[in-house]
Image (tube, rainbow, N blue to C red; front, side):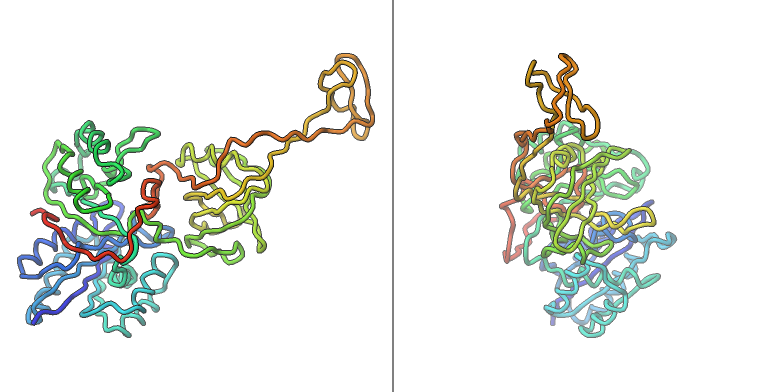
Length: 443
């Protein structure tokens, strides 16, 4: 008799090596040889991108498959061996863990997963969920990794989701720069967009499908369907050997980390939030090219920051004026002795524009030239003809707004993994039945 198993894996990598998706790609082949049958693509679940203890992309993995009940112990032992041998156990930041569940995913477990994606959850809360739903947790070092491993079990991607085909390098090439033909990536992007996304940064023409670290990924192609990412993969020409590849189903590019609107007074460090309010004052630029403005609602005021890597997005932010009504999306940065909490912007929605009124000195009634101040409470004088008008006041001049209502998002090079790109608006999925389509991995 076969049972459905859900196996969650998290926190296996470090900034210097490793990749949890690579372990998943290894296990896909190994478990297939053990007669396991996959009922879904490997699920790549991106968790809260704002937690300070993450390593890189804060992604956990869940493998969902059927298995002969007599082989379950053998399968779990095999998974533990593979995870242990491919994790960076020596790095203090890595805390690899495995969690597995037999049978269906409960609504309570699904709700827990959403909290891990959208908030900060304790190890004790994860342990309570595991005990309640008979989830077996196998921490390979400390216990931090069980949070993400359990969260991966509960996030079944029933709402919006995308796909990513990830290719992996051979071991001997992982210490040298990646080598793929850039022209093939440009062609792939032209012919598969918008069914694939974030292949190229339009502001800089930088190729985005290749990471920069020492991890085993060669490139990853993100898109709306398995067929789209496979087509993109076939068009990319690598100049080095590919060890293996696999297609993942994921919450990447879905804005899954955002839920309902928050009040400014309710904001907490490390959480993703959406705040609606009015711009207070005018934006200003600080050293480093970061643009700051204040946003207020009926509960308080908070600084919002558009950092230098967000490129031309900062030009939009600079055009905001006091009274503009916006929705601000981002992660909450913890306050310090010098600064209060800051909302690090991922995108903004402009809902209503205020009048942009600026005050200017009046014109001279005699010669028409613009006057200058004659001193405090002494009116204005004309530098050209010498006329003085003590009753004159500055005049309000409304300027035309070079800004439209709508959503504004930084360029793809500045996106978090979960940030929904412009091309995905209107392409959201919901409740679709998943059919695993061949080919979805190699070997």
